[in-house]
Length: 414
View (cartoon, rainbow, N blue to C red):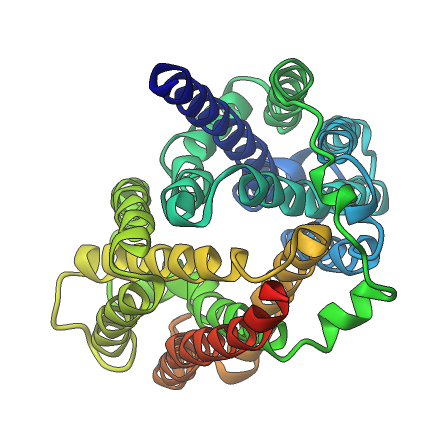
């Protein structure tokens, strides 16, 4: 009997691992698809009647589409087999990415990117949901770290590879490659992902989406990630210009900067996931926040005393470490029948937070006569204030969660 039980447990862990890596591949395709447009901007403007200013509009439309689609589809996404949603979203993302190569002007490219954003938002939500369904809470930090590590991998390898493809071919070549990769991931989903309908068997309260939107604990979870994204994206779009024009960092070393930042972020996100399982999400997040605030102050509120490489690496690494700890804790909140809806809203509000952070920074910053950024110290202060909201929110979430569990426990015994 012990041998049989041990074999069953090993098979279960094996299935978990397969699903986690499939979810990571879905996230990887989605993130590369999102991040590739910015560095390809100059290549696109040489081939299409589009200006460099339009690239921001194209990227903004994609982000907005992700945010809106997550909110719109949140009401319906839990009513279907997880595998079916994954197949449709990845297929749609792959086709939409391929459709960008047929663009002939700004509006046709915006349409293709909005379509990709609609499917990309659902793909993000369903990949995280599959991990939540497949992996027990006590091992979820490690699993989330693998999935969220795709952001760092894209910085290390995918974007440089995409730029090289564009240099050897055209701006369309990376989109062909991403689309092909998407179809390969689709085959993995069809072959290795089982039907996942357990959530459909649970009793479903009426108006479950409204219950989700008005649940105090969930509201704090959404606030936790929105403020974290505002903190990050007030800084991220301006790092390159600030380092070069204000602090004299050489343009020729930017590639190395992002490569090292990606490698260290990948390591720290794995450490953050495992630490969330071992010591808890809140202690992990507090440590990450303290280190992040130190380097935000040192790097962006006055002339940096630390080497800029260290400032960049610790900023990117702590952002990743904090976010994996927060996402791990948030993933434990929803019931199975509302899990995909929760993750869909969670992902959407992250993207909305990205946009708010970038817009607030743009409103605060000005450009000097030499092209340098003015008022960066106030952007740094904004980022610090928003960053401190995350551990406070996480503390409140855990208290509310314990209170809810205590209230429900007697009902379970009855």
